[in-house]
Length: 440
Image (cartoon, rainbow, N blue to C red; front, side, top):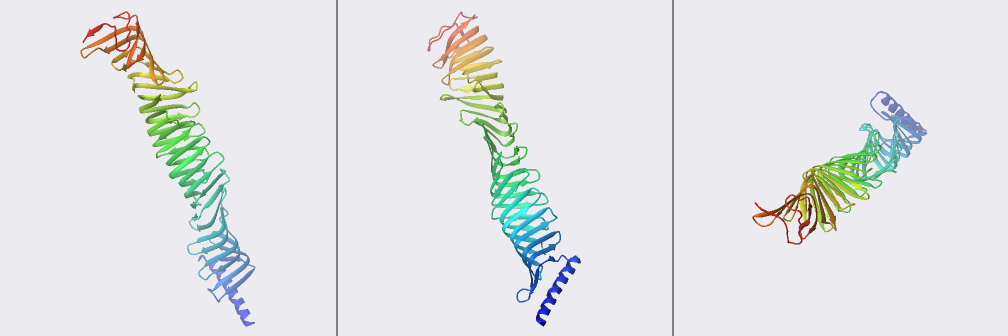
């Protein structure tokens, strides 16, 4: 009888002490409710509580089926554990280990962390209730109701005040419209913004982006990358040291060591700045722009201030402007504007064009070159046609006329002039020539 009365007195004293100390502001754990309350003097002096247990400490309320409250104000809670902080953040688990001194909570088993718009599930979670910082290292899954995003990762940290997640190891963000895979990612739940700090791949329909660092807005589907990045879309590959891409408008911009290529490898455009539009499949490159275009077994190398490429009747149309220079095994030249229409296999040179083929130099107002099997086949010079050919070490052939029509054979152009100023016509076959020769 005395032992029972003594145990009850100790339990009541513990309750009164806990309540009074909580009210005095010393930060002790306050017991709000328990169906059963026992004092275990045989072990560590813990108070054992069972049935509808409820604690309060600082700004958090903790519920569970049973708990141990130790003299150093540690709490072990078991069964249907629930923590509610400021009515904005809720955590649930099977087991809670809580240290009131540093306000650190460790949750184990079926852990769920919720705020207004997201839910995190994991097996083990450490939660700094003072700093509102939660972290896991055994894999986690986050569902965002606001953005329809589902994110999984090996490790993660949640900064509740900023609503920011920091993820690492096998990060995967899935959405009905896009998919993001990364090594390290920051995600802001309030804005849907992602930031990447490692190898990352973003897939949006038929568009795939590979990068090392950048930001991606999951709501507007706009991305900005600050390290080497590649965008693959509709048979085009856009690369740059810095890159911006807007999925909804389909516009991609690139700066620094820009490269735009066909996935087939037949065409590649390089420069300092590039722009690509999915809507019209139009490409623009400026700043020491260079084009490499495969033509049969040969390759055309083209330089200019600005290069454009766009579809034309199911084929490509390439335009080069200002300071244009080009080289191919069977010819080279320069002009102010060059247009290559793949559908017609036609190269057009305008504004002071000059064409060299072996020992021949050809000029005129406009020069058109018809290609066949990747080689120069037919030539048309419109207005002020002029041909200069090296006859030997001291003499040259010169022919001028209104127009010139010719064919390429064995590295030379053979053809005829109309309204020639120095000769009625010129025809050259193989190495034979009929022309007026003028000594230098």
